[in-house]
Image 1 (tube, rainbow, N blue to C red):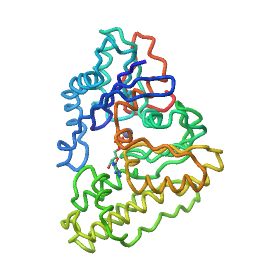
Image 2: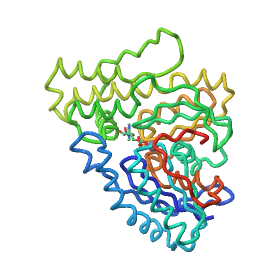
Image 3: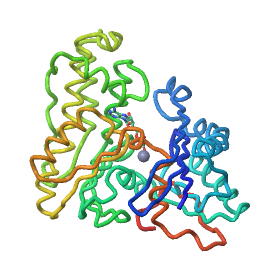
Image 4: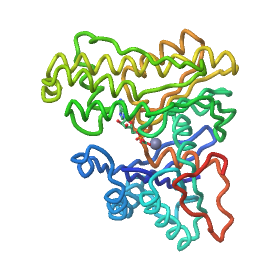
Length: 340
Ligand code: KG4
Ligand code: ZN
């Protein structure tokens, strides 16, 4: 089955052709138009600008994905598109365009929950993964841990009480004037550090409930920059900036992984999936490998280009869903709930 997957829930416009085979999905093409240059000067995504840009990009990414896969619209067995959650103006660009194309060409069409997309990104490298699995979804908007009994279910176990882990990276990069988006630049800067700087203190929760908090990191970085204003303009070549990035990255990786061993025992989990933009992080990837080996979990982290938002993960999830019977009354939903 050949599936065209489309994703535009935030600031990336992406299309991919995926061939769903008996053994699992095979990536035939992946195209992604970044809007980093547009949002960079603002230090974050500007929803109206993102939506307008998606409208300009959607036709190109679709056509390029088909051309790179060496197929035409008529060869498609299905079109899958992100239905939500996300920025509604952004979502609508690929959602409406794909509906129109599918209707015109008579191609079965299905709307996909964005987080089921991130989960299914792991199917490319590990289609035979054993369940139940713990699923850590970490991005600019999510820091959530789920239990999955298969590729289509996510049951929430715990989530951040405040900022997402990706926000901590993005805001740190902003305070240090390192560029946008923050994750990749902080990661690169941390890797050049010869040692870690002063460690960040982990948050304590008085109610004893398991969860995460990352807003303290933002305050921690702010205080360090206030005490040493030179850091804000020193750049990625500066040893102190590198050490600060390394401490931040070490803290985020360690805090994210801390609850996994105990929860995996409690839930009888056999595998651990980590996905979402922050799953590109070098430190998180190596620490997760060491931890999974220690605890006896099979680890599945998609390759970096499939961790950040992309059309391939939406195609992979859409391949496992029933297409809409039509007429297609479904609409994009900025606040789409899992299981809806
Ligand atoms: O999944 P994603 O592409 O979009 C959302 O749904 O949010 O994730 C984007 C987030 C951003 O916060 C970005 O800074 C972060 O993923 N990110 C990283 C890395 N690459 C991207 N964070 C840490 N290390 C990275 N290498
Ligand atoms: Zn995402």
